[in-house]
Length: 287
Ligand SMILES: NC(=O)C1=CN([C@@H]2O[C@H](COP(=O)(O)OP(=O)(O)OC[C@H]3O[C@@H](n4cnc5c(N)ncnc54)[C@H](O)[C@@H]3O)[C@@H](O)[C@H]2O)C=CC1
Ligand SMILES: O=C(O)C(=O)Cc1ccc(O)cc1
Image 1: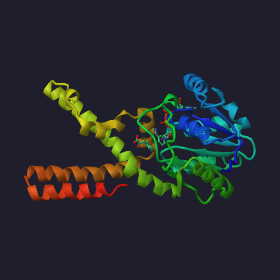
Image 2: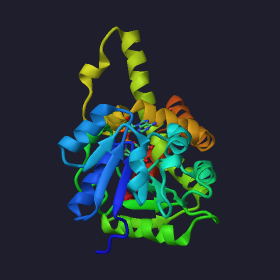
Image 3: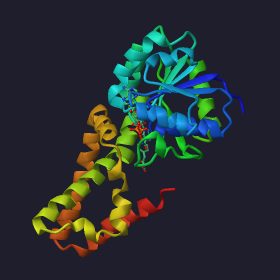
């Protein structure tokens, strides 16, 4: 296994940044791992759990790194890059782990122009938890890692980032940044928005019935709504940064639910069964 970086600095030591650091260690990364976070508890926990070697509340800690990995919510990227910029040394590569790419990748490239090459990345693995204390061993093994190069991407930096993720056990795939946002608006962002909405609907029904309906939930509710426990700031930022694609996915979802509504109202047993059969078949093909 070849490691092409000597010191990796993680900006935003939460669930994903922490899992990244933890799994670098587990795979035997021989270099130094540092982190910067605005939350002192994240830095303290990271050191205590031996997930990072050194941490700071100051962005100047990036000055000795040759790879900088942004793992904050996507809404603060611009601010984060402006803060990091004065400290990035020559030859350093900057990458990220955020759930939205598209325009954000071009913004990062532009902000870092003449300072460092930027490589957009997105691990397709995570949980509903947040914080470094919930870092997960082997989270990225056999998971997809999407890199989103543009016409401006430095090919050497791209190859180094891809190699790093292969070392973590991920299957690396390349996607055009705007296409990435359409794909993940459908398969990831829509399910999260719907899960939050289902919980909200049941809460409203609880008030109508003057009963806490959540006392009566079973496995189906649990399976369906685990992701409604995800971090609200992270998901607010994703919804704002990828709003157009998410709105298109919501439109499509509304058409589907209106179709079910229509079939139930019409008591159309045959069509209702067909609707469920078709969805069941599609779902059963998911690996
Ligand atoms: N949670 C998940 O399952 C996945 C999350 N992602 C992406 O990873 C990124 C991080 O998500 P999580 O680790 O889940 O969130 P998290 O809430 O666990 O961690 C975020 C960390 O960033 C820190 N932070 C916030 N603003 C900062 C700033 N200005 N400077 C430095 N640190 C700052 C917070 O204090 C926190 O420690 C997000 O962009 C998210 O879209 C990607 C794949 C999966
Ligand atoms: O908890 C889950 O099942 C997830 O879907 C986690 C997740 C959240 C955001 C991403 O961009 C990727 C994965």
